[in-house]
Amino acid sequence: MNKAIDEVRASEAKRMAYDGYAPLLKRTRWCLLKRRENLTDTQRLRLRDLLRYNLKSVRAYLLKEDFQQFWEYDSPTWAGKFLDQWCTQVMRSRIEPMKKFARTMRGHRELLLNYFRARKQFSSGVIEGLNNKAKVTMRKAYGFRTFRATEVALYHVLGRLPEPPLTHKFC
Image (cartoon, rainbow, N blue to C red; front, side, top):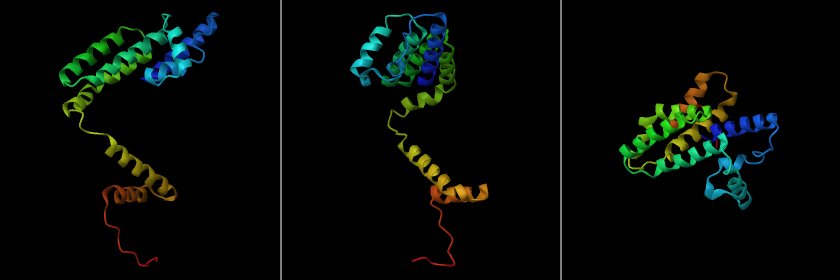
């Protein structure tokens, strides 16, 4: 979503500069991308001034802030209802990058609701750990001549397969 907001901000800043308006969106990137509680005092002031205007960037930011309510639901039914209403609101906003994000959310609706069905008990830490091990193994396998050798290395690291006995022992 941040990528969509940044795209909207950049295109709007270019359009405003081309039309000869004052550079309102200059140095506002992080004001729009950060969460409100993580803003510095200067960014908070700049955001407050920016929210006075009816810009696409501001509307995209407000849609992002509205979406944060999604994670506060406990019931998958209510979370699904909120997601549907939010996606409908975004589709009516005429902000194309945000509409693209909403289409992605609609496409992954059931997967998102699984988070609530599991009662928020599972962490993605295990998956992140496996991804990290795979990346490190791929980095180590950079000099391998074939993909098959890399594949075998991945099987051994991720599957904890036994290594074959070596003809030489290194002490």
